Amino acid sequence: YFLPLGKDENWPRCPRCNEAARPAILMFDDLDWIYCAPQERRWDRWCHSLLKLCKRRSRNETAEIISLGSSTVSDDMSEGDWEDVSNDEEIERLPRGEYCDGTADVDLSKMCTEDGEVAQDSSPPQPLKVCILEIGCGYNVPTCRVISERLVLDLRRRGGLPSLIRINPLHPEPDDDDVDEFTISILGRGLASLKVIEAYYGEIQASNR
Image (cartoon, rainbow, N blue to C red; front, side, top):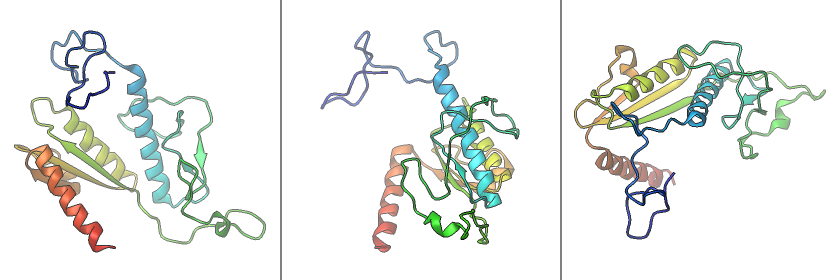
């Protein structure tokens, strides 16, 4: 919710007062904070969908997977501490190998028998790999650190392979010992660290060509 940036601007402006727009971060004694319920629901739905997809991948279910772009989520399992946002509407599903944009990376016809039924996949399960990139979250307000580590543990419990990349100039270490083996700690500032990551990633891409 801000005005488009001009050519010589690097900070968004408020469309009401034309002054610098404030970050959408809830601070202590913040009387100007505007709560956005739809945004909260989108986050909850995304987390539910991600955890469901993770569990299905670990079971090697081939018939269908849940679209992460689904606007509604229903589930018959508890998601721990995540808020329950389920309803009675039908879940949007996609055939395995099909993305949300309709493209596919798997020939679905090869997964069917002569009778047209879905064949059982004998290949080993392919765990869902999820990378969480956390930048500049310290101990003054550790909410983001807690959320990141909780999501890592939830994904691992459902058979996923999560990785938490924590970039922080003071405290890049994990807070929960159970998350230690899934955490990559980078002692540094955000922009500088991202530039180093980008450089290494470019080298990897070049070597794979």
